[in-house]
Image 1 (tube, rainbow, N blue to C red):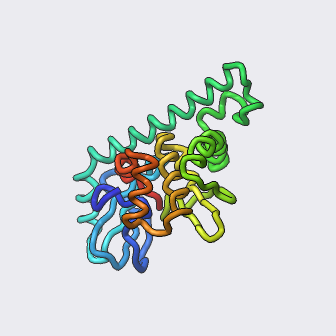
Image 2: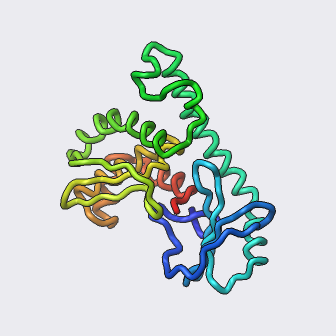
Length: 225
């Protein structure tokens, strides 16, 4: 999620949308969003691995096709990471169904649910992980949210309203490595102490989660749109 090979945690490429359309670029359909911006951003959208390009209005369709073609290796690697994460989730669900806990107790339904990539399943995956994460991190950080809302967000992996203690998490985190959900949760919990991302926030994050920059770097390979 950097220029030309992704975007930042809270999304980049902000600006006035001039045009949004579906184009065939380098042999596949790509959502192209033209904005009043200077840089080009390539996004790989979990869970399907769809592509979206956000680009300056001045770039032609041909230039965008060349842009996508030049990043085929990065696209393939990113899609593979997404597929691996989804496979791990499916395997975890199969373990629950085949083990002593049983399907109904875990809310995963029958075996066909292993391939379910719906919003409802994403919510179940995250809700299954949150209790343990909160039990681990709330005592460390010394703060507990008043509420956690799960929803699909177009520009953020998570957000926090310190004045109310409410945290929102992007349901697309369900399809990524669980340590990235953990990072986003800790990030938002830390905002209950520090509202911005300045030195104090970074100092707190380093104290709570020494490898947070590595996790952030991993998360930055993906994009929310």
